[in-house]
Length: 226
Image (cartoon, rainbow, N blue to C red; front, side, top):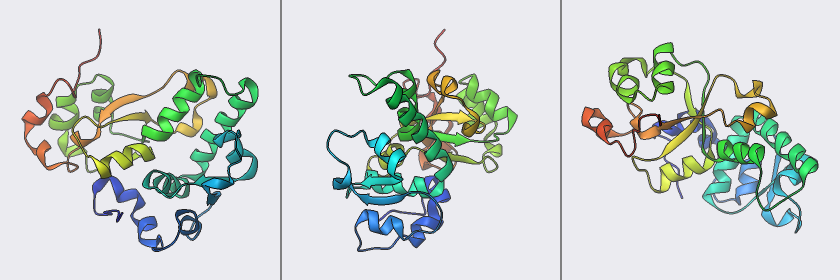
């Protein structure tokens, strides 16, 4: 599948996309990209019965399948190697302490949710941050629409990127961390420090949101639960 680097959600990855070789297995292509981070290996190098996260932490190798999901995961590893390594270390430590059970537990659940579906917003304008925390969608996307060219909002979750490629739809929602996620402790992560943001409401990300009525859909742009 050809990745359309002109889409706004791909802006932070455009340089990597431009350098990604074609006609090669995913792991080999990812290893050709510039930057630091782990080595990518074919998925069959993950031994049976070994946890994926523990294997990455122990070996520095990321098992990679021949699919879009794992290719996008590799691109995020190259884009944010320190943050991906931090999440992996927390996962591996929790596995070492608790083992693999029928459920992940609060910490691993939160880390997985962010890894798959998260977004980074390091320094949003105060008016936008306040509107997001209040779930005031009109203020966030309409009243303060002129502030949106400025924020460094970036999708981190490779599963969310995959959905934007395969089936973009109004209800796709990121789990946003405001500020530097590298500063969050394991206890912080376990509390799920996320704010929901329907990403196709972002100005410039979807043609239909030029109409203010786009934000009237209460099934997507929900008010806080009282």
